[in-house]
Amino acid sequence: EGRWSLAGSTALVTGGSKGIGHAIVEELAGLGARVHTCSRNAAELEECRRQWEGKNLRVTVSVCDVSVRAEREKLMDTVKRTLGGKLDILVNNAGQSMVKAATECTGEDYALVMATNIESCFHLEQLAHPLLLRSAGGGASSVVHISSIAGFVGFPGLAVYSMTKGAMNQLTRSLAAEWAGDGIRVNCVAPGGINTDVAKDMKLLNNGVFAMCVEQITRDPEIVKSQATQLPMQRLGETEEVASVVAFLCMPAASYITGQVICVDGGRTI
Ligand code: NDP
Image (cartoon, rainbow, N blue to C red; front, top):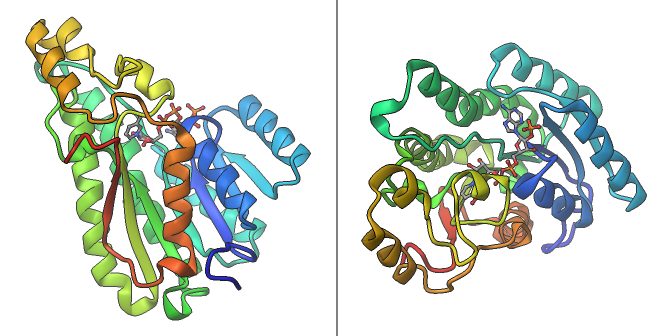
């Protein structure tokens, strides 16, 4: 197929009912991929499916809580059946934010964020490997992680969340090295503040400033000021601005790119 197309590809995108995942589903399907997605809410998923059908996008859905091992296994069985045993693209997007002072995180908080953000990612990749192999000739199959700039930069109140994102960044490099010989590319997109529910949880202002740290954790107005000067583009990103980079990484046009973490962050980490 074409170098700038995903026609004929199959894809699994986790967490596609809202936010960044929703935009990724639309972007990949719009470029010709057949996409399966999941979330925990059946009614919301069905509403999305109906809307996608109305736009002539080929998308199937099923409920899965990615933090639960048995549900991940069930998801991959469903994907195998629905997409004909072949997977070209896996996008691990579903994630859980948690804004809390480190001293206040409970064992349950820690376990939930780890299971949702990083254990799910690793296990889904183990499960997907045989399906990815079936389409892997010449680097044709591709895994994309959605991590965060919180995996590079220290933000107060986000320690556990940021640990999972730093781990995703490293998993990108490790699996890219391990699976290059299998023809599977592994890359990662690390968004800065993007206009979604997660941004609201984190109390990101429209100019991208991370206000939560003052209000809840440090109570220091100087930190707000320093945050503002650290975001060159001075605005939140939109979900489509992340989805386009994910789509590019999955295309034949990106066939020599593997093990990379690309920040889509308005310049926050430069
Ligand atoms: P949203 O809350 O807007 O959407 C999250 C999606 O994932 C929803 O479809 C949600 O559906 C699903 N989801 C959440 N938890 C689970 C679960 N346990 N099992 C299955 N599905 C789940 O979040 P964003 O779009 O903002 O975030 C997407 C990814 O991007 C996350 O990994 C996040 O960490 C990352 N990110 C976001 C940034 C931002 O500023 N928005 C910045 C950097 C990274 P449901 O809740 O119904 O299950």
